[in-house]
View 1 (tube, protein in one colour):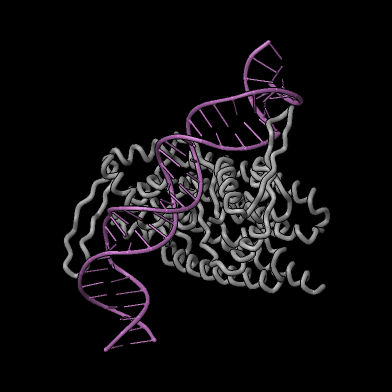
View 2 (cartoon, chains in turn orange, green, red, purple):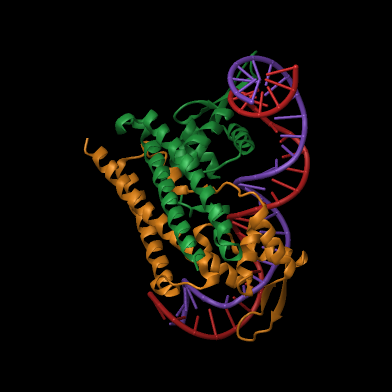
Length: 181
Length: 181
DNA sequence: AATTAATATGTGTATTTTCACATATGTTTA
DNA sequence: TAAACATATGTGAAAATACACATATTAATT
């Protein structure tokens, strides 16, 4: 159900197509929510049925036609109602790499280190990209009224990835010392 | 599919009942995976069908009968095969609180701060509990061969929660300053 | 004395999420 | 020149996950 509110939250700022919303998920929502593009399209259709959003089709010749979604008053009402009155669900996490880490005692130390090195690279890249995004959108830490959320969550993302990196280094160190004996 | 490997990983250490596995999920697996108890019971049934695990029923008079699951050779083989040869999926996160944070510009500053204070408390408690668990299981940082994974992931959990806490404080500060104008 | 928590395992159903596939064109990269 | 990527929106089916409920006893708490 919460995917709906994530979409309404984005639409409350700007009208957008399913494709654009998918891009926004990859760029900013990624710090706290993941969703497949097919799920986003399907949810938008349902939201339109329930009159939480409405769409207009834009004909295009060079590219496929697109559908721009706009939030309705009812949609905005329900968004606020959810925000203020619905209980906050516990976070849900599925981390394939940490799952493997939890079984590192089954594999050779070098293999385990290789996993961590790769993950480190991955988070390094993510960190670099998010920092660039922040510099672009909030030059010297300034943000507009309706960018508050993005400012806070992108900072969360950065701290999260930094914490990942330092943990990776620590874990690699533990494994190296273990490998010496 | 990965829930299966999480369960096999735990069973590879010790035989256990569905109930015990659920407890272990709450205690240690929580740092990287979430699963509902009904899902765990169902997955165990499927795993037994596929001969990745086998169970024996223990009759009890005071409490309900229980089923102890044990990993099979086939189960262990498949676990290693997954660990070493299957691609590492991207992590998946659903965080209801951060989703609300992303829409903080819609609500009064005091309300937003209240959300963060509550989340801070929540992570403070989690941190305290995980630290206690660590002290109990790894007194002065020592761990047994097959505890390596738990050692590494619980440390991840601690750093994660510390990072959450410091972000919460930072975000509350941002909101307080914003509220002054 | 009554309620809640812990112990223990599930089923039926609904919802959520992913996977494979479908379609069509323009631009960029190797 | 071929392959890959970006643009753009979906469907059908499967898998994963959650929700409500069911059952039964003991121990601890209020």
